[in-house]
Image (cartoon, rainbow, N blue to C red; front, side, top):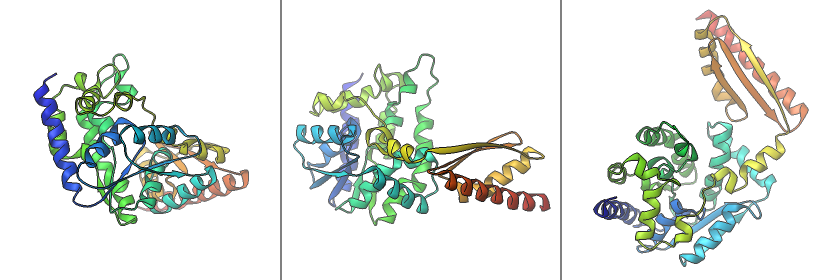
Length: 310
């Protein structure tokens, strides 16, 4: 790998972070390489608040405490009870249109934004896509297209990270998704970026510029696992029902799916397969499950009547 490219990549990352550092920064901090590297660079220019979110004894809180000590930065921890996680998830879902999975992994970011003291919220979003961090990229015979992964993520930001920061009056900073950073990173091959353990280029970059190896090679855990948000949500959602609803044709099914998704997204998971809508409804009690199923079927019925008239 070219040392010149490493220097260029660091230089571009540094420029982006320095630009954001005209204001005080809060970093959504999990203790992993993605957030640790941007925090480590940021502290050269401005006061930085590190904020970590998780349930008691969660992986992310432990990793964040360890990492903050290693880089000599103060850490603000938000230790949240599972019941509070659920309350926050419901509040977030009132304002955002997310799938169940998105609720689980965006929840720590939502709580970090809600508790941030500074006007800029910086995160490590995009590092896994740009540098091939996900385990699926390392499976034998895996088809990788990191460019598309990055492009797809950028398209999702306005309805997730951007919207969350706007709700709390913050400015979003995603240094790994800056155009110049992406351009230089993509000069490394996909094979180089992924490597044997994922994000190999990013890990070598971090060590080259003095981030401790313990952080640079820390094992990755997705936000929903590391923070404990998924466990908290799954614990309360005890009941579910799966429906397979047949329609006259695929066009009708597609129209009904599109019409009902905004009302049900988050707690009702839906997919389309030819002229069938497959729906999974979840709730914490059987009574709530029945009500949710009845509400969903009422929405389906109304949407079907409208679809048949058009």
